[in-house]
Length: 254
View 1 (cartoon, rainbow, N blue to C red):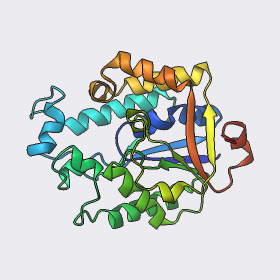
View 2 (tube, one colour):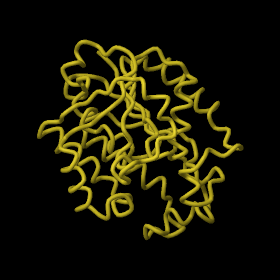
View 3 (cartoon, one colour):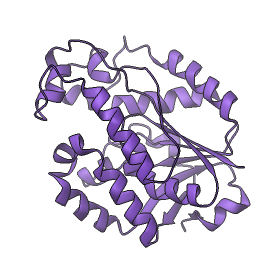
View 4 (cartoon, helix red, strand yellow):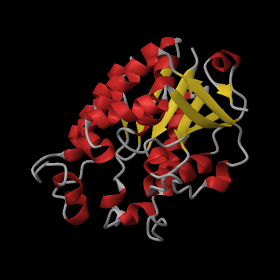
């Protein structure tokens, strides 16, 4: 059985960016392993880290990341996939990034998380021996996304990779920030066009991240509008040759 390993920085990135492909792979009989990297609960958050939940109406007594992990489990079920995995790394607000703008600026010099991520990724690669890897391009420039790309590169995977375009950062600005543009510019573009079933599964999965919908889309209705505007299309940069069976799902652009 072929295996796809999806490495999602946050608890929503994979579903938002390539939920249609994840659903299609599962429907085609693939073993799809979804792994979210930054999911650790941190007791008694303060400052900006605390504000990241209170500005969503969640009091300091709420375990925000536990709530988000439950949302992720519901989303992955909606895609028809096995229970997701959650790695115990802390999000950027718990690693010294003290404001929203800081999340999208240069990686801090003291943010030394890449070696630990690299070790975790190497262990996952050895365990799952994936036929395909899915991971972000870090479009939008979120430091957690950037660090995931750097760590995956350092892990030197042998499998082909589909690097997804980070939705909704791709549509939030007319010209979104692309700090790793040079890393991906030489790779061919590929895309999948989801049918009605795939679109429905992705919409249900994205809607499961209820804590994020107001911030990301202005509410559930905004999510529906944005997904409709995407017209079932998910785009990637392709690294390596895809298996023949996958070429029926994913086609090069141009």
